[in-house]
Amino acid sequence: MGKVIVVTSGKGGVGKTTSTANLGTALALLGKTVAVVDADVGLRNLDIVMGLESRIVYTSMDVIEKQCELSKALVKDRRVDGLMLLAASQKNNKDDMQPAQMKAICDKLRSTHDFVLVDSPAGIERGFNNASAGADEAIVVTTPDVSAIRDADRIIGLLQHARIEPINLVLNRFSPELVGNGSMMDQADVLDILNIDLLGIVPEDSGVITSTNRGIPLVYEDASPGSQAYMRIARRLTGQRIPIPDLEHKGLLTNIVNWFTRKR
Amino acid sequence: MNISIKQLFGRRPKSSNIAKQRLKLVITQDRMDVDDRFMTRLHNELAEVLAKYFEFSANSVQVSLKQKGNSYVLVADFPYKKFHDINIG
Ligand SMILES: Nc1ncnc2c1ncn2[C@@H]1O[C@H](COP(=O)(O)OP(=O)(O)OP(=O)(O)O)[C@@H](O)[C@H]1O
Ligand SMILES: [Mg+2]
Image 1 (tube, each protein chain N blue to C red):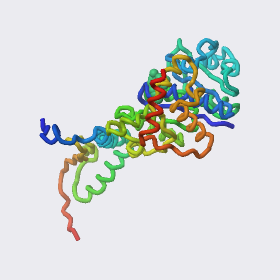
Image 2: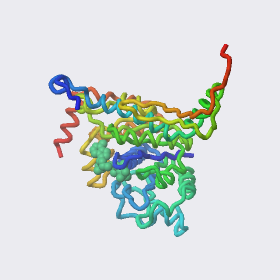
Image 3: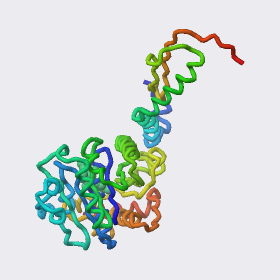
Image 4: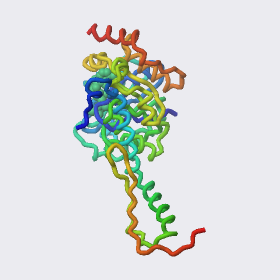
């Protein structure tokens, strides 16, 4: 019996899809069986970010409408063992799906996979309700800026209300340099405001953009700081105790980040 | 407005600190706005205490949070009909 984790944020564009793709792949690389589910009906993206867009035949909507079996709608990622994608329908919208229908899909996937990661759309409306309906736990993704954090707090309130726990935080697009010169809040500031547990920090990494361009999740690239951050987070999800490195101490890490940024 | 020489030439407060302060305030407000149950409970408990001293109709009572400059104030509006004549002590 696996667990269903919704990846959500409130504000759009903070890295939910990027995190779902990379954590799903990372967990599979660690030997887990994983299903990643795109719950962004009408604005599907997880397929293209993972590079599986050309292989989608069926979507969760087809499963709900009983056009096909769930097992048939799952697309197997051939690059790693144990990773499957369930795509969202692009021609429907969020109101065409009921939370109970998404929950039924999650319940089935939970019995066949160690991890089910659900990529939530932005917002606090129907799309979020659908995405979180079958979730046991939540990962809230935020960037260290005021609007994303404010919206994250709102989402955390809704998740708590729905009794989804634990709720863990991924702080994305973190820049040690900006924190160093006082123009970005650090993790202590963010945690002080949101008051949930930190699952990990993902630095700003241009590798995220180039890997998305190619449709190859960053975690396949060992050396990138973003890749290492996602691998550490995946290990924590499997229960390993991996300390969160203090990215604030500039110097070596910043140099590494810069070196990789320059390379491309 | 009130940009002082000190702010122009001296050390300006770090923008990350300003962000944190602003967020703490606005999130406090958001959470209370969202939590109707909290406001209802506060309303009822305040009314309970004040009913010892005043006579008022329950639905005339309003409790809310208002922003005042950089902070929030709890505004309680209790239009009362009459002050109870009670002996304190
Ligand atoms: N750590 C990072 N470093 C650099 N760029 C990043 C990072 N994380 C995300 N991005 C970029 O930010 C953009 C938004 O990311 P993503 O699509 O994952 O966000 P999202 O939360 O799923 O958005 P939406 O709310 O629209 O679904 C993308 O262009 C992505 O490449
Ligand atoms: Mg997305």
